[in-house]
Length: 378
Image (spheres, rainbow, N blue to C red):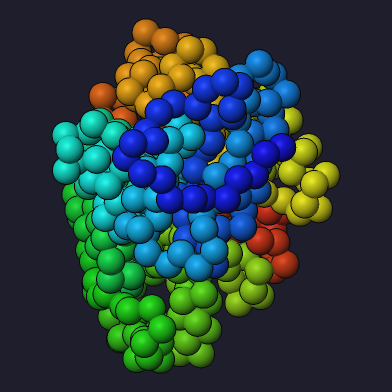
């Protein structure tokens, strides 16, 4: 499989891959950020799968060493003439920042390149650009499903929401509070936190004072673990429900009994594409894949199969992706069928609520199980 480094290119070199050169799929993620390694793994396996099918050839385009700016990375990927599309960015904030770059908004899309995000979930990304697509549900869908599940399955009526103070956390918390309130629930407290500078003991004391019967946490896994420890130290033992960014809490014993919203679970995947992906991933990396890997694979697969079907220029690819599920058959992916709605959001993608039953399983591994009713239930 071809893995290529990124080199800056000039405007005079903008042309599609030709003469048998592989179409590069760019990694729209910053090295060292959460999920980066598994994002690359997912892309590598997708490119191997596409190349085995032939005859169209693909390669993974890695970010240059030392890149730390999402905007700079987006500029470099857009200006590389061999890059047919980009998988990323995984974060909503970085995605919102880079969409105009990939779309070449400054020149009305003259050199735009498609970005298919694996996990960016902000509602503000719906319909944000003709050049942007995503294969994960929006926070609005995830929070809405979670609110109904908390009301119907947990029977909770009084919620505490502690959310990461960024676009993801704010959007998730806002949608949950709205749906929960309309369902008869009361939000006892709704407070933001900042990663790395939060005194979790103070937040735990506040939650204990408000006496909720469920705690919602749209934030990071490491923060969730610290918060859980502080809650338990304060004697707060009501159900804890983390957003999709908290899958990693399953690695810590403090998380046993907590619930996590997830977009992917290896033990729930059953399509032919999923079976192929799971076998290859386990054999290659000797571990279970997480949502970053599975959804990055799906993003690359829908790009590659569309290009192989004849959409081998950037504008043609953008237009062809719009037709998937809208006159053109959907594409089989690991997480489910891939089709896009009029806002370029994924159609019909489920949200799973999983419960940590023992420590030691990362993310959606064997240390979680799915409640049999509510959001994500069969």
